[in-house]
Length: 106
Length: 120
Image 1: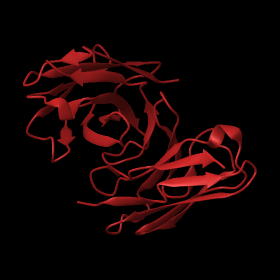
Image 2 (image 1 turned 180 degrees about the horizontal axis):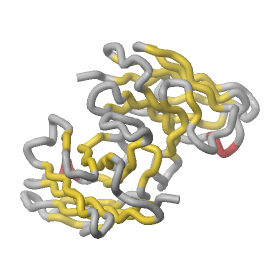
Image 3 (image 1 turned 30 degrees about the vertical axis):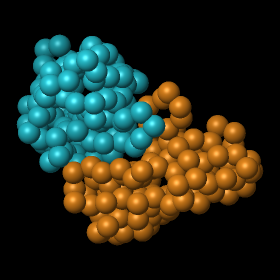
């Protein structure tokens, strides 16, 4: 069973600054990896798939990188609507999600 | 665009069966894989299982003994049954479409979710 570990649990960043979120897989998942954004009371929204490809309609300030076991989501200049919880997910095997990183306003 | 809408009882008694339906609109259920995913209050996401429009399924090993997912292409909907529920099954239940036509995949369209509470 592949375990996904996100860090940090909470990240405090000021609007306009860069945010970097990390996710580690307990074994290689190649590039079968995705990032989601979830706001309170809403369903998750797919941001990144294939580790680095933006989903349809996702702004260019969101970028994903990594492969194997280490992955990063970077938001280049935080907007007010970006403060949310972010989940990583691997789909190399049956799908598993990380526990989430809460991105909050500093 | 494709939209998903979950429906079903919001309250289920312990030891009984949770039954939910996901209606697909704006597109056909055919040609895609579809999953159920749940989220306990204040917690993370857990994949329950998937179904292909043809009816083939695969389930989370931790839930496999209690789960059945089915599809009705004539009604353009999929269903979830979870047997012998306990309080640990209390969660928001989402249905979701697989993004790239793969069995194991990212999920690009999600239903809003339906809250199910297990309590007597």
